[in-house]
Amino acid sequence: MESPPQHEGWILSARQRSTVISPDRQSVYSFDLEGRPLSWFEEGRIHKRSLSSEIHIRERVEGKKRFGKFRPEEAARSFARILRRVAEAPCSESDQETRARITEILRWTPESLLGEQERFRAAYSPVNILPPDQYLSIVLQATFGCSWNRCSFCSFYEDQPFRTRSPETFREHCLAVRELLGRGAELRQGIFLASGNALTLDDRRLLPLMRVARETFPDRPISAFVDVFTGERRETHGWRMLRDEGLDRVHVGLETGHDELLRWLNKPGSAEESLRFVSTLKAAGLKVALILMVGVGGRRYAEEHQARTISLLSRLPLESGDRVYLSPFIEPKDSAYAQRAAGEGLRPLDSAELERRLVELRDGIRDLRPGVTVARYDLREFVY
Image 1 (cartoon, rainbow, N blue to C red):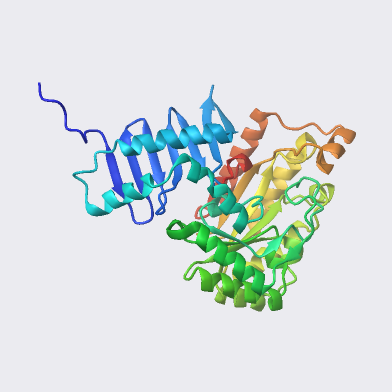
Image 2: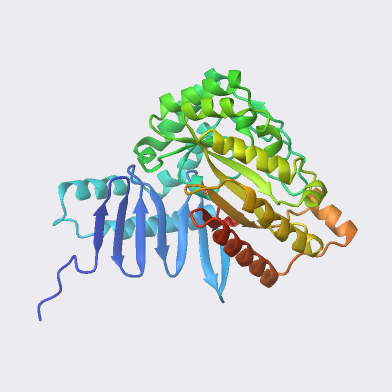
């Protein structure tokens, strides 16, 4: 009996911005144009490699998502296994581009992939958090920390005084990021101006940084975080000027439409201020991504949180292209929130109630704004 062709079952795909290799239906590997692994699926697990070559894993166990991260020695073994599989790829009948892509992948070793951690540290300070639509953007750290940094529920910027890079040091950072990404930058079609509240800067400081970002990575839209209570200081014409300089989307942590809960969380602002601010952004021609926390405030605030949040969203001038993210609340240990909740006997929602609230809020928003994207924002899935 004639043996089956060597390439049977393999898929080798040289895409415009990435390479995908699948030896069988159970395993799929993707790589950037530098040949570095991006993500892969094996044995029912999703693996993602960060730019610092940490491997984050996600799997479903007994119907529940479980998250983890490999130790360096586990990561090295995983890289070795991927490279062995790629080396087995029957590429002799493939086109020249595909063969060149495989050669590029195989120039890496487990040791050189782990060595990307040092290159990452040379280009970046820790990247604390990103919105889900920005995981594949180019993060450029114009600022560090958060200008408020007193919300009881947030621990991302602890011990990080808010500071701003000068245009000169920012340019050096951008060039270091460009060197780190190499051709892998082709996969990243947007710029995220970090960190927690970069858009709070006045025009004198912000505009030079935006221009440096666009000079280093041309033709990419810019997105960034801002809070209501800092963002509303800039008027419509100011936001329109930022749009003309490349700003495309503003990510706003609304958290809730319930004013009393905002005060309990030590977050300035109100539903009316949120309405005015989002209306200003939309009048300036910008897209928005609004972040809401589901389950924050526990059982005490659950009903009012949901009702007032839906009420606020019913009045916001959202349109197709805008996004609403629903983030299941994860209580940070030893945070001001945890201490206050314990002191006041605040009971958290159990997992079933949290999921029910999330689904109800999602469906309610979709009914109100059919063209708006509504998606889950699980902080545990963050990888950059």
